[in-house]
Image (cartoon, rainbow, N blue to C red; front, top):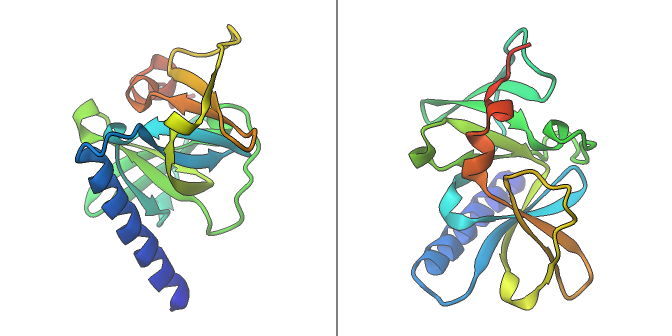
Length: 170
């Protein structure tokens, strides 16, 4: 029961932070998360919400990274394991995954299965890392925080509307 309360508290705090960030607080906050043992960032305006992974219905004849369909408050979402999509190992334990829901304005009911949501990160306190020339078009930029940890910022809209992402069938 306490685990459920802590998840609700986390979601409440995240919602408050998202609201404060979108209200024009002047900071360049991004949503941070872990997938495949790496740290990622995305703009808050590209995410609808982050929810616990519920029951996923597998879909036959799909790519290994396509996890299936999930119903979130009556809407169906196609779920892609973000780590597997990039050939990265899954680092989350059983029951720890979250679904990052893409904003509905993109016209695709897509969810990214991530290992863990980390909350807001301010890139004003990070140093930009030059592109290495081997990035995909949905990677916006790379950052290094004060502790030396590298963060990759993604554009969720470009990711969920890319031809490879949409081609889930074998």
